[in-house]
Image (cartoon, one colour):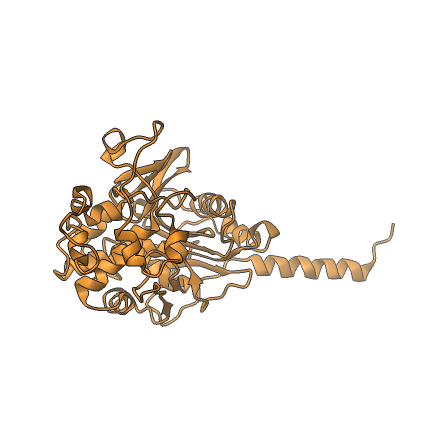
Length: 375
């Protein structure tokens, strides 16, 4: 059969266009503090990164709006899809919790908080009387809240829980809601703290993260958003951000903060590089080390530090631990200090069961899979 020359020419044009569109490109050089490096020169599999760019256009990844990779403090890959853009403020949901832990550290660095062992309830004497306070509440520390292992009956994964976050959101006073939560009990199938890894029984509690933000406000005398600007965002060159507030006007340290992709990657860099941004200290290295120390075990192959997750990923035939800021919808900032690596995935697939597995699989396959082998 004779081939149609026009159809053949159009096919070639389409092939060349597709190939050109998929070809690896350096991230844009902007005046935002990020140096840029060539992934190929660093040994990355750029063909795999090309496939990642194509994957983001597929229907199976329709919710993912951006992927960014940085190594050794340099951007090497940046892609936006499905309505995402470089200037979009991404709702990072519970990844905010890690930012709040950084702010606790910043307040401690300034002498406003006496470290993670500081007691919680003395900050709120106007809300809860010390006389008659349950001794288990009186003993509660910031570390209990930071590690999601407080004595409160608070579990966002249990719709029947007294402390479920949805109950807090409809209350008039979120601070009082958290402080007045009942003490938790333990069903026969649940492990008590002495029986649990690291001696802490994990229970995911946004109310506790919110209260950490309230402690920062009381310790610093500033709204949470203002202290975040002064202590974190301005030193990192972050100029656009959106913080939420509670019914009573307290900054929401538990979720919903919006950052641009390049900016939230800078927060990941603080975790990767011991509190430094481009060599300049922003948070003390001791606090970062404390954040990246396992404190509790939420489930198999998962650990938890201070408001920061730790996941296990297969890398070239063996498992590696990777830290992560994590938020509803599949939003992640992955941090692997052993590889000098930070990777951001933003996604709008909120309240979708497959969102987290999809983002984790994308990171494992496309990012860790394209990473150069150690020399």
